[in-house]
Image (cartoon, rainbow, N blue to C red; front, side, top):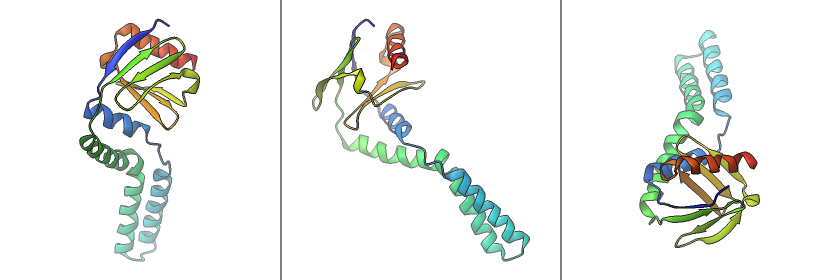
Length: 158
């Protein structure tokens, strides 16, 4: 891989998308939601009360939509507020064949790719995590096509 350097200052939308994408999916929403909706239908069939039926159905639909719709909206709101509160600094990143060097006002260091705990590519950015301490979001908008290919090769080697 040919070494290259870039400077990155994330926009609010990129920061929020990256952080929302990092959030793990709970995975319980759809099964619990379907179970609660089934309970609601059972209560309706047994004619145990319309209020109880509607309560089960509404809570079931909310639980089923939680992972895919509700949690991302809540996360973007919280992360967007954090972005507005904190002063963002530009990151200067230098990618080489063996490591990435990070320089900013708060972080300065060289991180070998062997320390990558998570690396993923999305349509708009690359997420590179070095433990819980350093999380890099590299937007595609700052990369040349050959740099995108180099980072994809890095992810494949990993």
